[in-house]
Image (tube, rainbow, N blue to C red; front, side, top):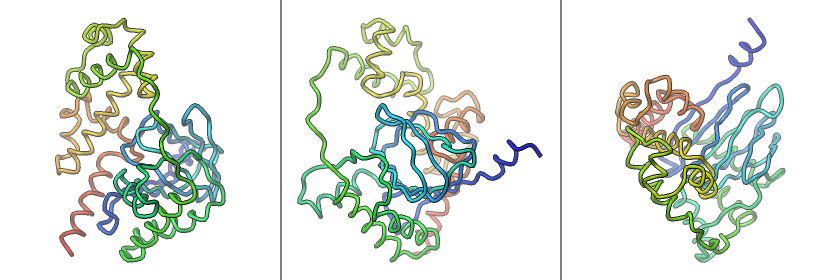
Length: 287
């Protein structure tokens, strides 16, 4: 066995949901060679590093998060993720929806608006053991503990680490072109235009569109399209569509392309993601 093969075998990831934590996805993983591509989440990404070091690009900077650190990534913010040391990293991640965090902020801070987290890596946060305990309780099926600990942990993060969004910057001349380009991509998952056709449709030059699109979304158009496809794939998998059928329905050329892009964004392959949804349904039917 080569050293590289041994490292890949050491990797493991489990994605799941628990009815006790509505609006929160859960990921427990150890990664060594796996790399998350540039991507965004609709939800917050909040986690605690258990061992090793995760390194990731976010908001124009390279961040390193070591054992015991809490990682805080806001919704719709581009980021990556890879090992920061040869032995990789392990972590427990929670992905609460915007509504979950907004409701907690409204309860604790009298409705100042939806929070964001200006500090991305928080070493030694008091929320770290709470997040870990909530995640572990959810894994064990201890509903009362997981829901209580998760709410307490999210509340601590909102109280001590959250801020509120500054006024939006003044709109630029390229904003309308980007808006229209995004609408076209949302409607063209199966048969997207070329860059030249997309630029022609929104009446700008191709390089101008690439620059404006990346400035507005953090991603070039083709990467943004793959993010949309993965989001659509998640919806189809949640609805019970067989994983083997999803690739064609979201515009990937084959199952291998879906698997590669899905894992680079979600952290697990589509089939593993769908099993998590099946597990959630089984638990719900049991109550």
